[in-house]
Length: 102
Image (cartoon, rainbow, N blue to C red):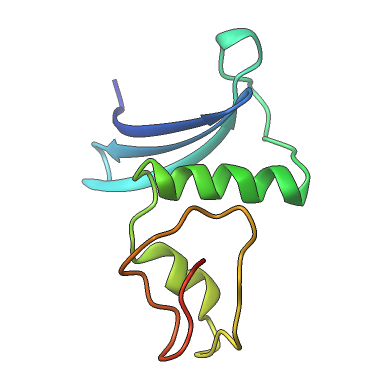
């Protein structure tokens, strides 16, 4: 076995997983499609809305760390009052001095 599953989130047949990859000696994220309960041998194709739901579920389930969202949103150093619809409340994740996820 090349990896150990640490956490998994599912939205329909789509999954986001935190895995410990033994060869790399680090945790990595895998996004995959599981039709009929088996991982597909092809990439996951989803709408932006479904991808946002999967990311939100991954944050809620602890697949993605509390540090993930600020790094995603703040690539240029400012969130400009960003609000992400449907994202679960995450007390303690600060986007900038004035903004919080609601």
